[in-house]
Length: 112
Image 1 (cartoon, rainbow, N blue to C red):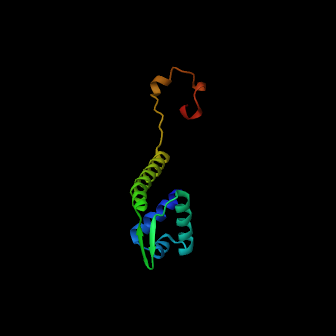
Image 2 (cartoon, helix red, strand yellow; image 1 turned 90 degrees about the vertical axis):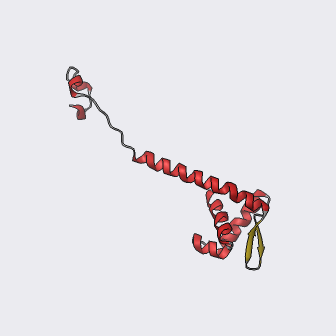
Image 3 (cartoon, rainbow, N blue to C red; image 1 turned 60 degrees about the horizontal axis):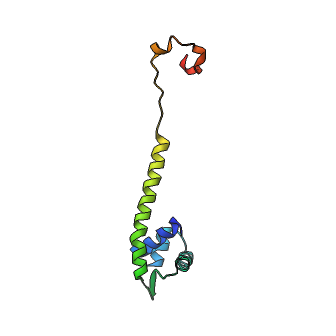
């Protein structure tokens, strides 16, 4: 299971359709169906009831969706925190008066 699979399941649960979700996710409908079948096989449960043009969640699917939303939310929070860390700038503050009595050679060139 990976985040992509979680996004697939959440999309199908939201739209109620493999075809609509495939369009929304920019993948082919057969590729989406295969990904869900592999996920269901890995989990050992069916997540969806497929009938004609209708798709509904099984009880296992409902439980999956409930926790999948939490996982995706946490994943997005982690990504945001990592982006924030990349944008943090670190500053070095040294009072010039305190530095004057030290050998300038002991400091990198930007302190001179």
